[in-house]
Image (cartoon, rainbow, N blue to C red; front, side, top):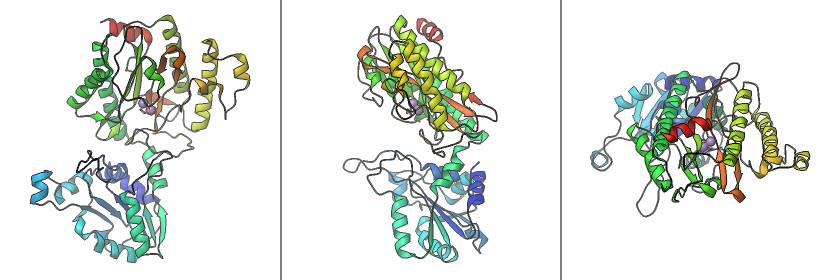
Length: 419
Ligand code: GLY
Ligand code: MN
Ligand code: MN
């Protein structure tokens, strides 16, 4: 898989190009603390390497065939072995990635200088996610600054748009990993269905989820949202510290990450085991919008049109629920959708090595893309928030719901809670 990913990138590079792909920084916290490093998705996509301080160079036209593809890794030593444990040997890095030539990171600058002298265009990476918040200069940016200062006359190009195109389309192996991640999330949610009752705290639900995930060699793909009652109206709530009360719903937005592939699901359950008629009406409205959007997803459609169609569905549902009036609907437009008062977030996003994975922003959707579909209705004045979220694979003529086996019908949820 990683070899195929590198071949795909090479096919997009113009003649005499050099592409440089870095590992992520280990994120610092307080004092000498660090967080567990999340592997850089682009480096992982191209090599399967998760180790810090690794670099991949691709120079498909280099005169020396041995320099056309080189992976640099840290040289293990006694200190790193004592404090951090085993690091990859060159043979292990080769076996994991398929990259023919593996060298120690200390050699990077001399090899890089040779390749710079042969190359005309240099493809450098950057985090170009639309909503990325970057307060600390990342490794990629530091390298770009250094190279541009040292070799000002080269042509520098953006690698990110190429990676975005490549990573959007998932191979069958990647889809299989995503399915595993979804199945692990399903197991966690079923565990919650077996333990949910009034008096349980949101953090106890989180504990059930991480217990199930860890046992299955997965991690949280993102900080989970376990939001009961009015907390569900806070879109990015993750205090997860309130007691779940009889009569409330609990919204659980959680995804397992397996082999770095993220799932992203949301389910909303009645804490006491039964939906009230009002909760059920809102729940079924959200579910209908999700089903209709799933039915519409196909290649050629743009994200904008997909979202707009769901907003029109949602307008009608909110009218039936008495939350919007005909007058509200008459003022609806794509810029100011009427439903925005109760459904204020996007319809879905690409999923893969990141939970908000990279894909061309304006689409159109292509076979192999994996997307979430996640409509919601949030009514703070009723202390009620409902979102449902599944993961969809775009196929040649529609899509496959990868979460079709995860209980979502209200009757099924109630029956599982009754058990
Ligand atoms: N859990 C993040 C999202 O649903 O997009
Ligand atoms: Mn989610
Ligand atoms: Mn999502």
